[in-house]
View 1 (cartoon, rainbow, N blue to C red):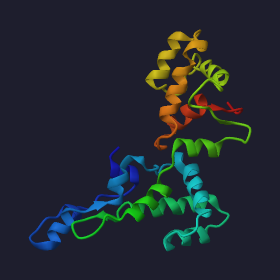
View 2 (view 1 turned 90 degrees about the vertical axis):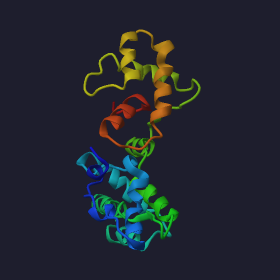
View 3 (view 1 turned 90 degrees about the horizontal axis):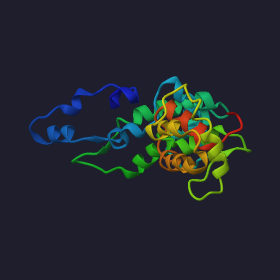
Length: 215
């Protein structure tokens, strides 16, 4: 899936136009907001609907935001689903805005706002999905070692979605939870802070990197 497809927007042929004079130079040298954040952004399929609702909840608590976002905040108050859909549409439009060209920019403030509302980390998404009694496990030390070992025990029977290579390797060592649970901890430390880009990443991290009473 290419970048334009992921964002749900078409390509603009005008961005490739070249010609004599300032106009030609300007249009051929534009860098968009979308080009800066690329595949870190949330997807547009139904798998991401709850994540977009999370983004609207985040927006609902913000002050000092652009008028375009304030309008969304006010219009969809108390309706997270519609608000999330509106934030998604705002992001899709924002990806096409100019970040930098030979005549202007860089527009760092607009980029920062796009990052805040168009990118959601796995950590944020998981935290929003857990109950108050549950949590993301510690990435360092042995305080959560017992829970990591419990999660290790789920690997032997895991058969619904593909495991990442480092976790799939543990299937060969199903009896070594007491010594190899730190492989899972290391995986979680690397993966949890990254952007939420596909639903399988979310499912894997939620299953193996959390104390989660619903699993």
